[in-house]
Image 1 (cartoon, rainbow, N blue to C red):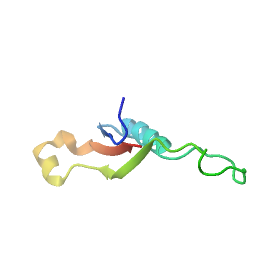
Image 2: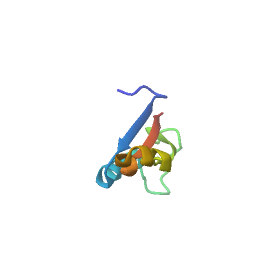
Image 3: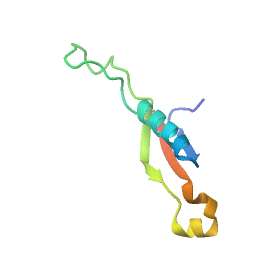
Amino acid sequence: MLKPGGRLVVISFHSLEDRIVKNFMRQESTADDLPKGLPLRADPLPKPKLRLIGKMIKPSAAEIAANPRARSAVMRVAEKL
C-alpha cells in the first residue's frame, strides 16, 4: 500500500512489539542471502524493499517529565524503495 519513496513510521510501546518491528525492518532492508560464488551479476539479484532512516528514537527527558507513560516508546522509520 505504501508508494515508493513513502515512509513507514512505527511507534512501539513494549519491548516485544519493538523486537517484531526491528526484525521486520531489518529483514526487508537487506537483500536475500545467496551463496557466495554464484555466477550472477548484480542486475538480476533481488533488491531490498526498505531503506532504514536513522536509528530508533526515544522520548526526551522533557517529554517523559510531561508524559511519564511515554518512557517506553520507541520510534523507527523506514523508506520504501
